[in-house]
Image (cartoon, rainbow, N blue to C red; front, side):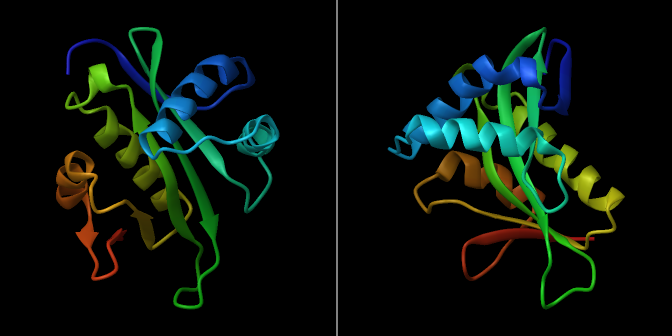
Length: 150
């Protein structure tokens, strides 16, 4: 990847670009959500509350180009919380440049820092491009859930 990439927590001043990125992500999955969901989701991502969603934004040369939403939660199979990566998106013009990998690896670092033993996510079967990346970064389960154990 050429250029200066920064992966950082989402901030209040990112709302406009976050909305642009999340709208494009939802469009990929042929989904439209009402304004109240946008407001609620963004507030949750910024809340800093335990067991609430968190957001990361990928900024390439000063321009937001990707996002990730993740959540730490309890599991009956582990003592420590596990991490669920709910949403991952990179602008089409930067796909294949390492943005998705960098966002996932940033979440791996967050999970390691929290003592989490697992990061997992799901994707739709038709998402072949993303699945090629996921197959390199995690184990594909029989349930089409990707996870990486630490």
